[in-house]
Figure: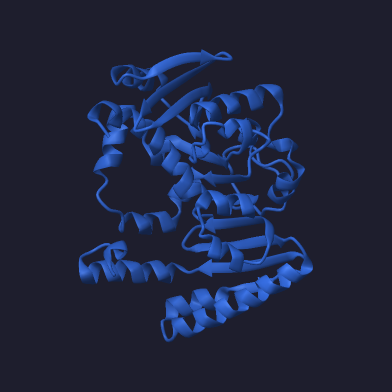
Length: 330
């Protein structure tokens, strides 16, 4: 990427990455900063087009303030890029972002075949500064349905950022950002997707969650066909987590029939049994494996899990002993 495009792309990608890493920490998060009910979900779902195949949410401020986040900060690599991002855009991800909603789109909103999701971030953004940065590096600014949209093309992709309302931006492809604006104005948004919203309504008060269609997500994730063929036929899935000292949460899947659900439970029992053998005499790992609870009935399969704080103590110890980040240890 040329230096001319680097900083503008960082503007979009910084917020986009936030949606992916916190909204999907869970690959997959009470006290929500936007209105949330078991039936309706966060208000910003009104910006998500009805054809979304997956939606994720993260209460960023709650996640960032969690004990777990403070532990993980000690394990982070060099933050020079993040500091540079703040210098150029004026956005401090930990301080200025309150919440994110991320969505995988299909259909007209994804007509440009961009695999990156639409992200709606709520917080504090310096519009004048970001627009000025875009102009400085060759970006285009347009008015779409009364909304200022900044876009930039580079490396074969076009990224856009729309100032959809005071304190909120939409980030994604140009088609996705325009689709978000249209979805809000027309009312034809994911709130009318009864199947997906039924799963959202079932979520507990978690600070991170994701729901979606399994087949569509598997396709977008590029899972090998051999692997997909070994997974029992699934239709929908949801995962919800709560981050504090550790992580607790649940994963639910809806199979296409009772037989597929039974096959999935059998497969998970085998995986859990193997995990217990692998845990051996490692207390932290054993605690996590012992927390796994398999449930569900009919076409539904559910797994509850808990990752204790001790797991992260072990990671810190590994770093201190080796002088390297755990991710570098092979």
